[in-house]
Length: 561
Image (cartoon, helix red, strand yellow):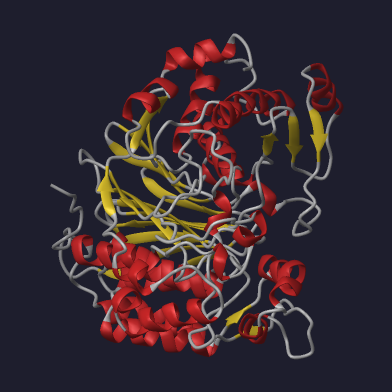
């Protein structure tokens, strides 16, 4: 059963959750749920679950299908990170899918070189992450080819443009025109943008995916695909070499950060990602006056803005010391004591694209996945033979040395705001979510978690609620068609400067600037899903015919030793 939700979304993120609901309906048993940013990707995940695949299987299929059907936000040449919770009583883990800067960088690099074109590209992680997830944690019931096939079909037959994707084509299409390959694929022949209901086909990407389905993802790093990427880079001034691809490290499996919020455990992504900032927002909310958080009103929005101002300010002025040796520093930053101290006194971002999706299968495993090519349409250039868009994660580095790990160096991880999150109660997952949107990811995830816990109106209300965000300590962004006098007075009293997004992709009500949360919540004994009305998302439920008592698949619930 598929449930269509209203509007489009911005960042590519996905979540997968496996759990039992107990019992069957009409001779069928619940085998999972998917919420993602495109109908095509959701249907791909549901099909895999109904074949007997687990949440990891479904996540791989959704990831690849999203890269084709929401190309402004993610793709095969981007970054993918998975937060996996195998189920009640088991230990969650992260498949740490960071990208890396090239090993050899020229002198005199400028900011413009890091924004677009092949010089803006880090070495992609997505194929490596999906390959590792399949080899170590898949069910064994679905082949690799079957997981890639839905994306091949979407690329070959095309996807139908929805309202959000149309806005992305309209407002960012001109930036693709200087690159012939990107323009030929994502701009119509007459130079205009694709409209809602029109079909976008990607035959070159279908060729790439067909090869990956046949010979495996490793070809992207050491085979024919790798050689053609290196050749394209050399011919067009890019910095990625065959050596970079061949020596790309196996993604690490690491522990997530863990915090708490009003009796719930909250698991999220470690550095270089933004999970610690999201946990600090929740800590500040928990340690401050509780009045005003249980109602979705102006007072709640002001409380959220204050907590965000503190946590985003910490990230700006007191960043983590290291992306690898961070345990002590992070432990202090996400402590309740630090939140109390920060409340005693308050001590930029760029536009980003990404995607998130959520899946639950019948065994209790949850997977939250965020993936991205960074900005809308990444580096704005595509591989001439294979048609995929390169990412532009190089723009996440700082050129000026400030003694932080954010500075551009050879073979370094880029700064990221990804904050895939799983919330548990009694050691079982109850909420799975994430978002796109650069630093707004952190704000969006914290708001939805707080709304779900504090307002208690369910996952759909939590995702649909209007959002706020803070930039540069005092610039407040407020969503919605109107702003009440109470909120305006509160903003003035607290010295906020009211701002409105200018990205041009909003409708009169919801704005993708504030993220694109695709979430699943366990409510009254069943999993419910929410697709963000700010995107073209869809929630789907998978059912299987009852043939015997449902059992976990061979690898379902697997976790690292």
